[in-house]
Length: 307
Image 1 (cartoon, rainbow, N blue to C red):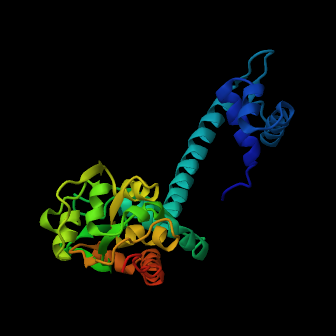
Image 2 (image 1 turned 180 degrees about the horizontal axis):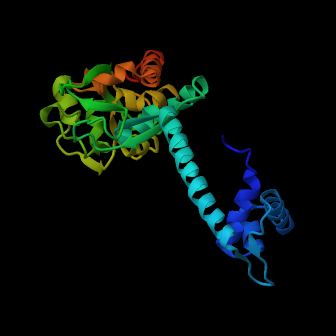
């Protein structure tokens, strides 16, 4: 049989023994010194034993008090460990970790996550950005959003969305950007972290696919991330080759425009990757349904200015 123990008094007594005094114990527990003293007195009366030898500056436990304090420390410490484990497990069960490229996270995923939070207040999303160069393992993330050609790694893989390519710029640049040749009068913004060989969505790829010839002398500004390229274009620092998912929102908001009608489909796409056993996870299925709905709901591509 487990006695109906006075847990508050036991906790207060253990704190007094550990700190050798009532004042520091009261500070730790966030109560008054008199409240701690009352707890200890109540415990001594309940047990019928003196547990402390009280001093002017320091209190020390009796032999029975030392034995009890040790038992409380071990027992409540173990309970605390178990509770911490259960709370951490509960938090883990409510958290979905997504691994994706920074450019996709900042330009497409982050602005939409508020919709998920409002629809699923019991779940939370944690974003782990990485380069995407290493295969998705499923160890540190529940879902990977990968960019490239079709994935074939023994994992569960679904197409999230494809990608179209076209030049974009801030509206302020339009008066000096009416033909392809006018690109020579502007700085071309280039993402230097494209590692897909001939399939990379570069200015040369776009021109080749659209059967265009870029001007011979071009100024370029190379930037280290796709989100930096988009931000520089919005700020009017040059003309970027827009990758549809990353620029669709600033296009819809009028922060960017399409100066030319030429458009081509990228050879690369965005893929949802996860371990096969994830199909049985309700939280992962909730996220998959949500993100696929967001893809369907994203704005239509505005027409080019100079058709």
